[in-house]
Length: 393
Image (cartoon, rainbow, N blue to C red; front, side, top):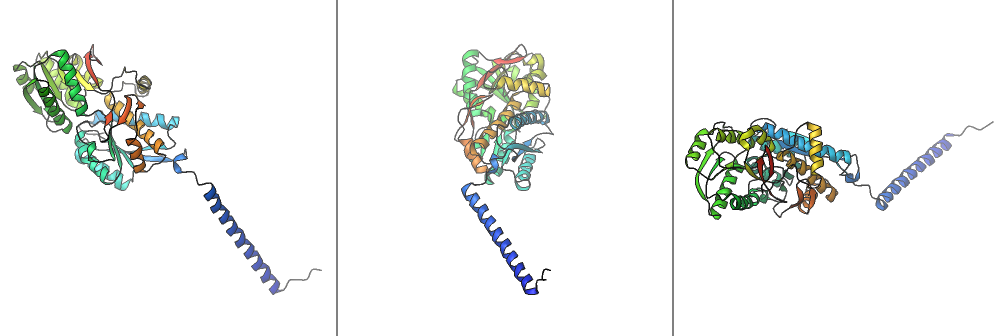
């Protein structure tokens, strides 16, 4: 018969057991620390299940709502392609904010995304007016901002965290004027622009500068404001001066009406319109025939992936992409490439990677950023023939 252990023996066994457990825990902790030293933990960027939240600021309501919806489709198509194909080791998630087609709305959206949502990157805003107000907020907080469609001069030069996708006014206008002046031989022209929109005012100023440089006389400059629908008085005054061409600087909603009212007044000289897209051409119908634009993309281009993009967009949304859609689509691919190159979701690392992108294949062609964060790729001059935009030759 076994002898029952006394109290002292029991306490000794308990103490020995505790010492053994403590020794085991310490040993395991030391092994874990050593494993981390020998094999560092895999960075988050290499985890296929990791994600980066990206702010998106678009005009989904208000004056530019239809343009904002087209841009949204471009963003989402690119995001879904990238995430599905795992082109980046980090999945892209969007936090969408409506700027209500106003400068104030864009500022509010940027502040919310930065201070409440804590994003490292923002795609937007759309207009130059909104970009002029919102970019400084991103720069001050060292948040990367990429505007897909703002084309006024100088907006990226405010700092090193801000970038733009469209070719800017100072790139498009001198080349466009030189080529069209040589072919059309216009000597006396008129301009008309939206005096409440930064892009339009900047574009009109650049046009007049380039026209003067090329020895072209600007007979008159008319203006209107965003939201106007009746341009007949301005166009009648222009017609009375018998110009050789009319230059229009406007946002998307006003362009079709401008062309149609010019047609109704019997104006037969070429309209040269800022960033004219297929959407506006279709809206203007026969009145758009012969209109010319300086732009960065054409749906029939054979640039890398362009035809696949057009087909995929058509299959997904049942319509044709336009320039605003394409610029938005490209912005997401540029961002994805920067995240891949940076191997980080840190805003400074992404900024550096964006700045170092050179000749990256996009639907717009070989794409680089200049030292100011503005786009470099081939500009195009297009003309409406048989109801569609084609190369001006």
